[in-house]
Length: 322
Image 1 (spheres, rainbow, N blue to C red):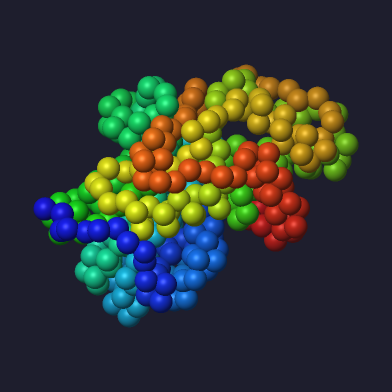
Image 2: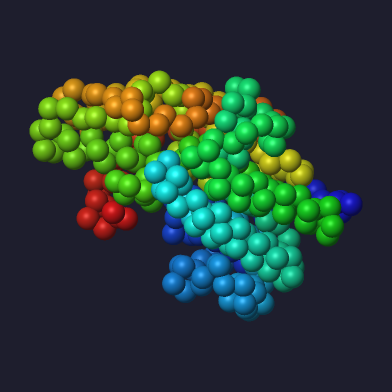
């Protein structure tokens, strides 16, 4: 049984561990928590603390006893990486999750937010995708290993609620982008890949840019600063076993997205499509009515958000993950 828990403002002085604080989501959450007055944030790089090492994770929790945890650490990648290294995505993510969740329970973490991904939902789920479509159909084969690991994390959180009465929650973000993203040519998601490709094409004066797929799939994009704000809002205002979708509630085609990116970076050449390459899921739009009912909605528009991501990319192009 769940213990009676009334969501309330978190203690700004309590120890708050952000697992994966250097990644896209984790760094966004870290920035937001700092801006909201949290004074005791805990972060460890993967070289300082390997979350796949169970003993090391338990030792970290024993020493620091974080009252709050956001689990944003994960091995992540785009279609190519997921399709090429499914074992890594399954094994690494399962170990990270199991270790952090078990250690958090053992050492008294009060509130925990587990971050999943919208790829947990069936490939042909009814659109927009509601939370209750989880486990109702087949997954997208190109990232099923990652999806299964994330589904296991949601189940783990639900099991913690049932068995130990812990008011832990899960959130499922849509496609995220912004400062701190991975702009690697082989390991990145679609939006940072497009930003890099078009920025380089604009700089070199390339006459054409060819993108993977047909350009017809529709995708929803959420700026990571919005995601971070949503996470804190859920920790302070939501308590329930079901994961909460976090998105904008609107989507664009990949073709439209490419055109926006090209315009923002100043690329004026031709945009072409290689339809022999996979498209992935035809549409992924999240139903965000549960999030709206909890009192939150996104505030950063796509054009504004992409401009911000482009500015960050250009300022950090020499030092970012290549």
